[in-house]
Each structure stands twice: as C-alpha cells, then as structure tokens.
Image (cartoon, rainbow over all chains, first blue to last red; front, side):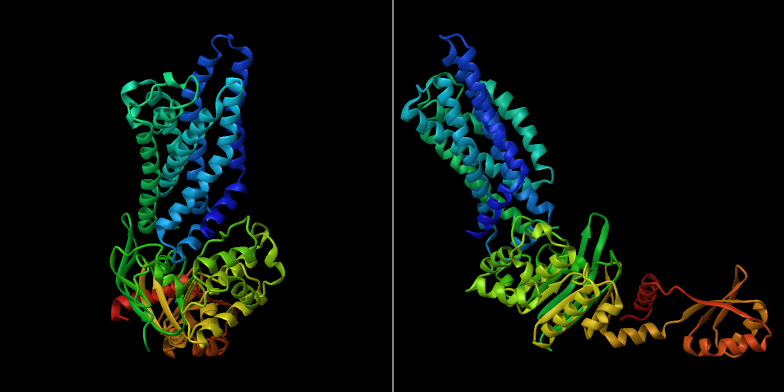
Length: 239
Length: 310
C-alpha cells in the first residue's frame, strides 16, 4: 500500500491536481448553461452532444491522463523515483500503484463532477440505472486513460504534451466524429457504456460492440498499461 | 577479502560518449573511496551498482546479484543518490518509515526512530521535507539508506551540503559502518575527504579506473609525481643555472619573466631555493606551485596508467 499512499499524497499536494478539479466541474457548468439556455424540447439532445463530444473524450481523458502522467513525471523530475526503485517491490506493482493512485484521484475529481453535470443537464431525469452506467463509463475510461498516462510518462519525458496531442488530435476530434475510427478510441468505449443507460446517449457514435466488450476493452487497456509500465520501469535508465 | 561488489569489464555509453570504459574491480567489507573529478564516471558507476542503469558491456554484481534485474538485492543494499530529491510533502519520519516498509523491515517505526537518532535528525523528524536545508536532506538520504540495515551501502557525494561539524559526524558514521563490517563505496571529488573516510580508494578519470589501492598509497603516488614551480626572481638565468647544476630541477624554462622549474623533489628544492637566490645575489619575490589542481593530478594518474598500467 505504501507506494500508492506516497503517490496519492504527492497528487493531493500538487497544484496541478486542483486545477484539474476545476476543469472537471466546468462540464457541470456547461450542463447547467444548456439547461437554462436551450430550447425546452431540445435540451436533452444538447446535453447528449456535450457528453458525447466533451465529457468523456475531453474532460475525462484530460484529467485522468494528466494525473497518470503527473504521478510518474513528478517522481522522475525530482528524483524521488530512485527511492522507490531502490526497494524490492516488483516493478509491476510500482506501476500498478501509480495507476491506482491516479485512478482514485481521477474518480474523486470526475465522478461527482460528471454525475452533478448529468443531474443538472437532465433535470434529475437520469435515474439510478443511468447513474450506474455513467459512473461505470467515467470510472473505466478513467482507468484506461490513467494507465495510458503512466505508461507515456515512463516512455517519454514530455508525456503531458504528448498526451494532450493524443486527446486533441485523436480522442476529441477524429475518434469522436469519424464512425470508422471509434473502435480505436478509448473514449468511444466509454461512450458505449453511457449509451447503455444515460438518457440521450443512445444516439452517440459508439463501436458496434456490446457493453461487456466495452468493459473488457477498458479494463484490458488498464491492465496492459500496468504490465507494460512495470516492464519499462525495470529496463529504463533512472536519473 | 571476500568481494561483495564485483565489476567486470563494465562499460557504459551515452550515444557517442563513453561515460565509463572497461572498468573492473572488486570491493569487500570496509570503506572504499571512489575518487574522481566531476564527469569522471563516478555517478555512472554508482548508478550501475545501484541498478538504476545497466552496463552496455561487462557485468556488475552486488552480493552476487545483478542489481539491474534482481530487485531482491535492495533488501541488503542501501543507496544514497546524488540529487536532493525527497518527497517534499512528507515528513522525514514518514518518508524513512515508507522506505523501511517497502524494504520489508519488520518494525518500520522502531527502525526509523533508531536511524533518525543515528544521523542526529530526531528533532526535525516530524517536519515536512520540503522545508529542509541541503544538509538536513543529505542526512535524511543517508538515514533512508540505513533504515533496513543493509550490508552494502553506495553513497554518492554524501558530504555535499554539510557544514564542517556535520561533515565530521558523517565521516565518523561512514567509518563506523565500515568498521562494523559493512561494505561502503563512497564517492567524492576531494582526495582529502576520501582520505578521512576510506582506507582504500579507486580513482576514476574520464570514465576509466586509473588507480586503485590504499589511500596512503595513492597519496604517495601523487607525492612522487614531478611537480612544477613558478619562481619569481630578479636574476632568472643565475638561479636557473644553480637549480640545474645542483640537480634540484629536471628542466627550467623562462615564462613571462619568471622561472618555471620541474622537479622530482619538491621538498628539497623548496628548502634550498632561498639559499640559491641569496648566493646568486638576487631577491626571491615569489614561489607558487603550478598544476596542483585535481585535473592535473588526475591527468598525471591517467598518463601513468596508460604508460605503465595500474
């Protein structure tokens, strides 16, 4: 548990985490704006559009990926990674601890914000089923993006910039709006879970797979990220 | 001596740069100094031994383990890295206890208390590391390396940032560790520092091991090397003739109005010089050594290693 606790404390103490928290609630603000401003017959469509194009592929992706990249990047930057490396803790467990810490922090920031946004955007019309699928979508997409962030930070120095490019150029644009690209997008599998129960989400562009497959894909990406991160950590040059 | 650290023909490159080339040595219990100027390859060698990096050629073994691939070695190995980094949001006690837990210490709290006493950091132990001075961080780095009672310790410039009293305490601590049967490899770029900590020394220059032996032996080797003196007198030719005539200098040249003399017996030349100047009817205005910096010392050892082998 110790490496997770160290990583969580580092994330809690970082200003960047709180900036990401503010970003998370922006989605709620936009949902509220839609509720207030949109035509009364179209607010459900508008909310669905925002969720499809902004919540999962941009806000969730950005927050979780940056948290994953930060938790490793900061340890590399200030050399504290050496004190973790100088322990008999298996490298896969260290990578797993970073992913877990980033994921927990992402859930803390994103679940209340996105659930609140849904409540505001749908005027309380989401129901328990919708809430469960929303949490599943945000939670599992966060897991995959956190693992990707950790892996990126172990592979390259400027992981956050690379991660941002990935989100902007792929997840939030091509993979969101091109039908043919949705099977290669983590966000698309997250939207697939939203489509399972969140009102208005049935019209999303999602991969033609079942919800169970979407769950498996997102969990598998998280697991592969941990495994590959552990292998990379065991072979990389430390500062 | 049973070797706890064995390095066999290890080399490390960074692109086209040879950070360490064909280094071999064995080290057993006790303190061994690793001496070299900045960029000599000391930190590269310590990183290889700590498992933070891997040799491109050759092998590195600590207690029989390959530290680059066998993490179990960290139960018996303690490392003090060069950088200042410590988790700034944690207290010293929490950080050391976390290291103890991760290295499988049965009672981390008690081990932490004992090691904090050992490095004299009990007072500020419950303060956050972010507010610590460099010297305080240095002692916490040593404490975390000791907390699990390792048999082998790698200390990269442990005296950096310490004030004179703290240096003395750290030197005593390193000496105690060596005397109690630990293998301690401690790096420094100052011979005087290494001499106070370590009876044995490895000297690195430009990524190569150029000398190894007792600290006294290295000191003697350095004392034997030809030395150069710049002598300022009013009548350089007369003094030059006397120095050569009496066999006190191997060569003498005139440089900017001063004599530059190379000698194999600095003590005797220094003793006789005032009398020679007086006999030549001139005034001795100044004497200063040339090339006494560490670079020159290392350059001499390098040339000697190339010429005659170690």
